Length: 286
Image 1 (tube, rainbow, N blue to C red):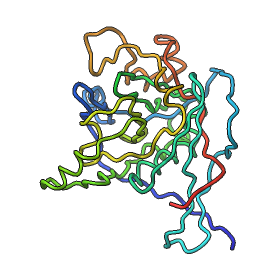
Image 2: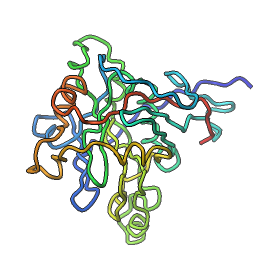
Image 3: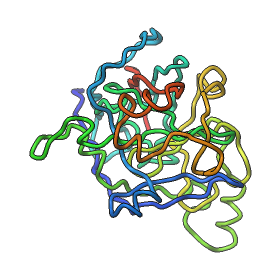
Image 4: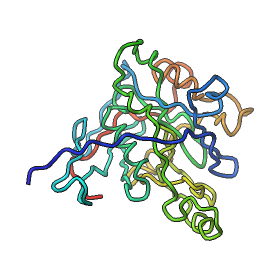
């Protein structure tokens, strides 16, 4: 039967503020409202043209972008076929993500869309925040940094659209005792990847009993290869979000304004980064 192309849905969600993820850990999310609001929250950011060159790692067979999501039957049935494995290269080597469309359909779709649009393949995406519990990355550099003037088409414009928030896959959004109990029984595990805001993500380096227990904490997937070789070895400057008096470290506003090439390389050159991501050619049913 001839496969039919399925267009990925648009996204609609509330903008987030700072989300507590652990004892002294928080996920910082910037929104475009005003300067104070930006300083307190999360910006959504893709890449710009890059002069940065790294050796390519050759592993697995990957598809080229964009990736088409197709169905071999009705658009309304449950037989939609999606790529679920994402293969990435980084300054520390390759790693692999297994997306989970069941537990976090909106978060997983957004990560897949970022891969489709080439978010990771134009300019390195820095792990700008690294601490013992998590690493945070995915800030969208500004249109100015990416050379997109007023009136020009932004190839990453779809990533600025609001993303519908997922709900906790076990405890949901309820505030009743049972819902709270279920959420507390299912915190994020080590290796969990979660989509926060429009383009930012975190990966859990060390699990605790707090991360992943809020109403909208939904695991978009898991790092299935590369935790020890990549995420355990990321270079860590001071985390200025959790330790503002602990010294200099990468700043979200800096990443937004100058991206990797004009900000990270000049001020924090030891920062590790993702250099490319592709979806595997093989797909599985959701």
